[in-house]
Length: 340
Length: 300
Image (tube, rainbow over all chains, first blue to last red; front, side, top):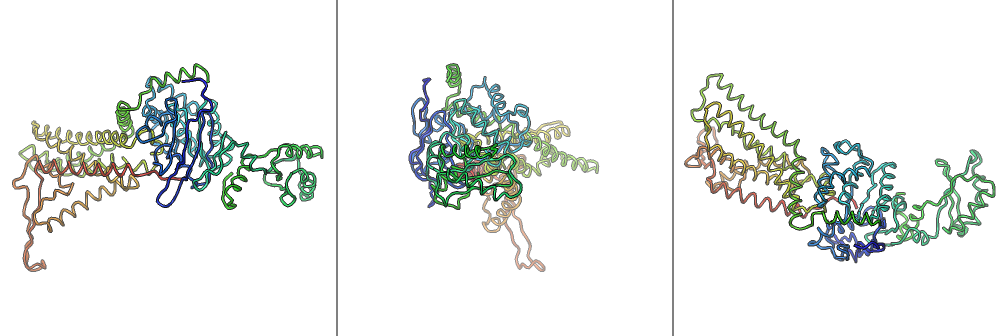
């Protein structure tokens, strides 16, 4: 074992393909996941995310292509005969976890850790450590049937990491959770990164991915259509929406207020005249404007608003918005519904 | 990464049970103990059911005694009266333990957590062993209750009861495997339980009766429930093992001539052994193949 292991590829998909009869669920996916990074796997429902992850878990056999996983210091092709060895260092949370309701997290986690050969002497302390990480120590001996969906999801993640794997694969970990539980899961994923764990995370929720991922692979109709860092993807998008909030906007005559804003903002957006717009959302009190995504223009717009006497209390470019634009650009399908 | 953390990882790596035969057996063992815990509630319910059925028969016997109906002279005959519903008890307990053995992974999607931590083969072996053990204990418990009451009444314990118990456990295993097979093809636990009981109460009996008419005296070795008769047959093996049943013809019956057919009472030991063996082997293999091929619902 060497100390300098960063940038090491831990997982590699080569031309990974899965067909169900005539239907191609995953088509020639090529992907590399490096040690210590969080790779987001983004795509709408039915894009092939879970199928790809199931092939990685060897729950499905690829029709074509290979999965390579690092074991004993070298990348080894995953096969039926070596899957026990190679998958030992990976923790999976595949789709929605369902538990045996009449058992406690302690009993279930103990079973899962034992299955993975975790040292018996360290079992109890490991279970408590993981449950504590989830902030659920008070619930460790309660029956799971009394848990909320978010709590069950946390136990699902705990089950994936109980044997202390280096790689953690999370398939839609925030689906169906309330905003608080989603944030908890996101925070935990970031905590895993700090622990130098490698995370492969899938979601159809743009925001969930953009908040945590170092690199994002976008999959559509089973094909990877983009794979890069968030910053590079944003650059490729070359267009963005600024969200800003003004202290005490007028309750009356909002139209002329917006018109005044347009006069200030439009020359600085960097986009052609017909593409310019400024909108106001009365529900959130947020103004939005479209610009070319260049940070220099973003700064100019902010400075211009302040120098013209507007009391700006919020000014941001939500990352998910960029990705959504990029996704639509890449797929050329305007009707694709992506939840933000 | 800090040196201490690397050291800690290395220690865990060294202490971890390596994959291979040792891990395979330990996974089966871990599944076995986990399943015992998981099915504890079902086990208690089934024990209560056994006790309930025993009490029902004991009540009937007691009422007969109060009405001065004499006890059978032979303790075996007395014991046999407690086995009237043993087949139904076996299917109920087997359905309780094996009904969910495969279906629940797909119905509740619990399989999403289990795989790929453990292979389906090892999981199924561990589950079958643990649940069958619990099922067997229930049947032993029922035999024990019936034996105790027989001993109290007659102050003797015919050892042939132990041989009947052995056959009961063997038959329980066959029925358990039958329910396991049903669980592998059904979508839910409740459907498995219902269909298994319907098969026991209706389908097998109907096939047996139809074949009695059509197959002209052929022993119904292809009917799983036929082997249930060995449990009582071993206590007092009839000779011959079948009887001729006749319906007389004549006015009002719609028949000009009578009908007769052969009704088999019990299989002999060899037929019972091989019949149940083949049934168990074939159904377990089919259940295993079906389980291996069955996939979780995808919400991709």
